[in-house]
Length: 285
Image (tube, rainbow, N blue to C red; front, top):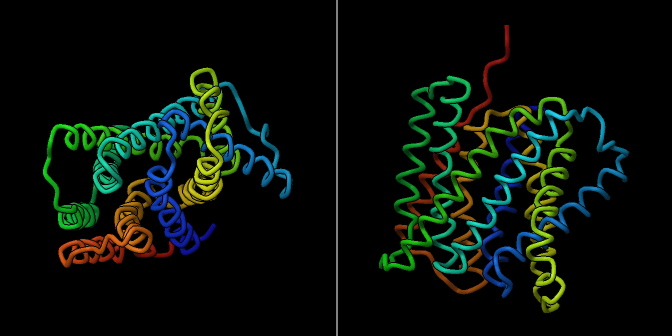
């Protein structure tokens, strides 16, 4: 994958991830049931994709790799559970904006794990995103429920940052489809004993929303995300997902008539401006 295609893939993945909160709000099931259903559809889609393009799911797997995939799957599942829990108790806006704090966690985790200190440009991009997120934040009163929801969303952001950094290890010698499929399989195996009965009892409309979550927001988006990490650093990739609250606001505007304020539009412009700084690195001499 070229650098340009990796950037384009990140944009598509961010768009798909931007729909996550919308589908989670539309579904009436609880967070555990939503995550289990999402994992089921994701595994099915990824296995069909692997069969269609003749990708082997066991090639390159070792015990160490399986343990790494299991850990990343556990973190990914926790990220989903905490995010949908935040959506249920505080709404899409607060949940999405709290989760969008994860680029700061990525910079810290990469510094701790690889001693990759952020450059001045990295700090500038993060600063623009933080200011943009502050402006994008809708006006709300932080009551007890909203505060709790925001904290759950920030925890979701921390877990996703850990997955982003962890995928730098697992994506080195495994295909993106392998990584995404095995991580979702581990989520599925963990949640079947807990939420399997509730999943089977869901109403038909919930099956539709969760199918879209699994096929678009997970199977497609997660595959593109992992593939791009083979070219991009996690901190660069994370900046694209700062677009998620912008997409979330736009989708909410279109679907629910929630018109954004001028302040939100200015914040979104700052976030997009930060992404302009993600330029192609110079070719090696």
